[in-house]
Length: 139
Image (cartoon, rainbow, N blue to C red; front, top):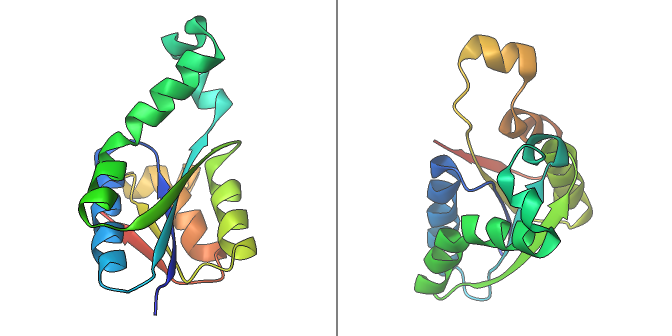
């Protein structure tokens, strides 16, 4: 069963829904652990005002984005840990999923339209295609 779950989050609404799904799944399994990973992509985040406040404020803003997910896990009395990583989200999540020997990856869908997804690719699509374990994509 799914004792070790990797939950990839980005603060979006679909990510919050994915967090609630992961919490529900983990609550069903005694001893399950969820590893929440937020991958900060400097290229995308560089335009945010929070950089002007320095690295501490930048990390606090990241933690604030995942607070609703933490609350869902705590409400379900699920053991979890949070890792904030830096890099391109898809490769980092795939590497964590494959190296960490997770039983399941839970990730929110970004909701790109079919043409955008075909041209750009989505993080969830890349994870589905390259992770060695099952992946649950939540819309």
